[in-house]
Image (cartoon, rainbow, N blue to C red; front, side, top):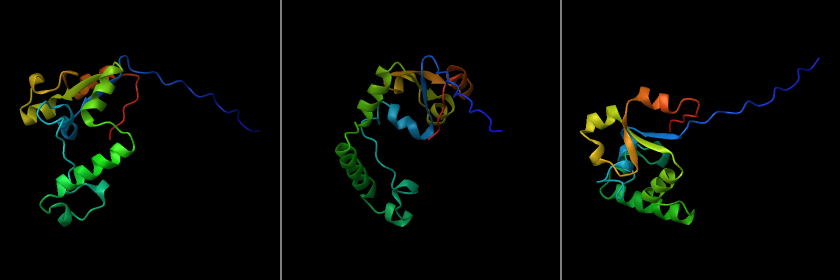
Length: 135
C-alpha cells in the first residue's frame, strides 16, 4: 500500500532576517573597499582560469571590468546598491567578530547599514528558525 505524501512543512523565518559577512565578505561592508571590490583572479575556481594566468599583471582589473559588464547586461546592481537593497528589506547585516578581529576592523570601519559585529554563536541565535546558506 502506498504511503500518503506528507504535506510540506512551512519553514520558519528569522525575525528579522540576518546576513553575516565573514572573511571574504568583509570587503562588501568595509567603508574603504565596498565601492572598489576587485575580482580575485588567482585561485578563484569560478573563473576557470589557470592560476598562472590569474597572476599576470592587470588580470584582477581586467576580470573585474569583465564581470561588471556581464552583471550590467543582466541588470545585477553593483555591490553598494545590492547591499542597500538587502538593508532595505529589513535584514540585519553583521560583521563576523573573528574576521573583524583578524583584520583589526571595528564598527566604525564598516558601512552604515551594518547593524553590528557579532560572533558565530550570536549569528545562529539571531537566525534561529531561518535558512542559513553559506556561499
